[in-house]
Length: 172
Image 1: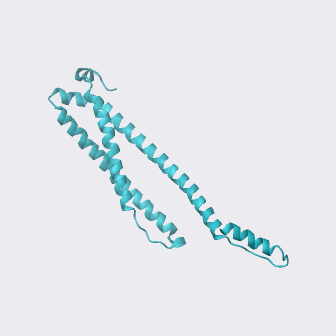
Image 2: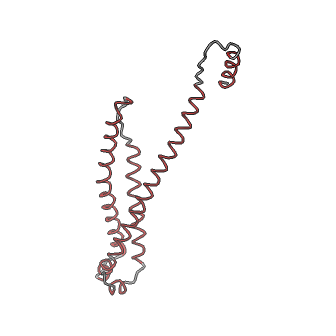
Image 3: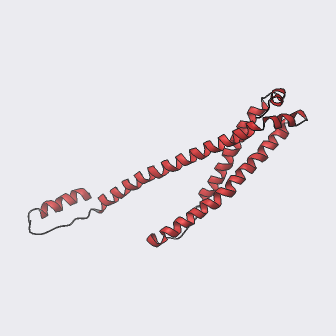
């Protein structure tokens, strides 16, 4: 045990006060380093989760508002013969386009930020830039899933709506 060994060395050294002694307990330093990494991880992941929740809320709000504003348009399409399958197809294509548009803007910006961070820190650590492709694929799947779920939710509200009521309403 490193702590017991350190205590024994200090007790032996304590007998001769004319000498100086420096003890470096690597186990204690590793434990302190591990605690600092854990604390930093909690803050970083907490921040990431907060940003993700803000983004998901923004996506949900934007898509729901967009679908709600187009109620009259969808009602007109239904009145001229749009089938439920056709409506679902429209919702799926719009989901795909929303997701791809978000990824078209988000991925290059994220990769550019990673490159800039690498360039600013590369002199300190001397490591190579490795893009986390697996995590990028997870993010792509997550964005597409969130957009699809949101569009499905907003579309299900429109399916239940009466066509006549939607056509009567005027958007201001």
